[in-house]
Length: 428
Ligand SMILES: Cc1ncc(COP(=O)(O)O)c(C=O)c1O
Image (cartoon, rainbow, N blue to C red; front, side, top):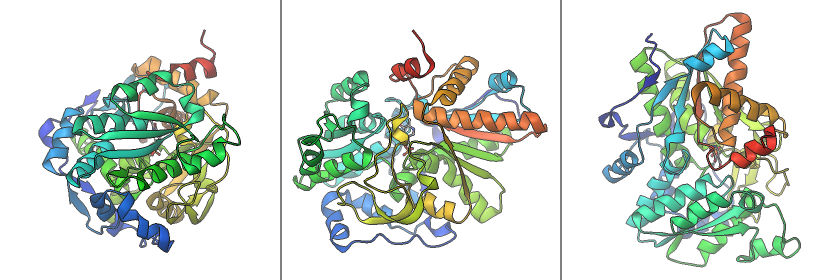
């Protein structure tokens, strides 16, 4: 084992295939339900993404052009050993974190945005519509559409739209049009907006709006930023790089941690390691860090819609109910009713643990501050949940003296979220 502080991969080590875990799952994924909704999918979604959604091929080639876009977006991204944090905590654990915060727009969401945009152009679409919660996915899609020459329309959960003006302007600088959701632009939005123009919104409502908008325009497709199988597969680039980086230092994680809203960064980081657990007998523990606002992994494992207006097929997933209201939080990207079908199936088979932190978010933001003062990087509010879980696990090791290897993914940076830090931990 080597004590490297920063573990870099050279550009020619960028993974050239995504890992599709479907053939290695402990049971087949339950199929989506709803004839009408399933029949509408080819008109709403990007064809290649839909094909990948149901693929049983274990490895899917990343087209050369997407590899080039990944390189331009700064991949491969470093894995860091948190030597300062380990010292500050006095832990016997070895802590490693992956740096998705080096993304041009601030998060891992760029990985699937670039792939989806490439396929959308190939198919001749000229516009993509979408939802966003934290604003990270909306910004990633605004960026990726601008690179490939597509238009972009974003429906943004109002509770967050209202306080993240800089992120809204960033999307607009990339050329996107951005609406607070629920909006008066769609029937699904108008029904809620007309009753309450200050409605906080939810990801489920914003998805309904994006879908309705795209269904009205034959040149538009809907791009989803999480939950679906192909999105998680695009994100496996994170975990595949991380596996190579662990080989360089001759180490291997005992615990893998990421925050979880719909499941894309958790899946992207953990799935390659879960593949090792399923096919090579590795004994790793996987922990999804969530908020008590919407701890979807503690919900029911049942069929439910992915959106509020019931435009999507029903997916078998852990869910809290697609029309439930959840209290807004600063890490609002974690406020979603359902978890990706792949992660849900794995949880149902006992592969995924979960922890949910209190809605006041004090412990989460204080842990992020501790991380920042030791390691220098400011995590996005959502990513701070993963940081908190990693620190909590490292402190358990301190008590027991165990030398566990803890790997966590920092899915985004918090440069545009400082107001959230200010409010929660009381900065002036
Ligand atoms: C930085 C960041 N991390 C994590 C998430 C949660 O989403 P997912 O579970 O799809 O990774 C979000 C969602 O907006 C986010 O912005």
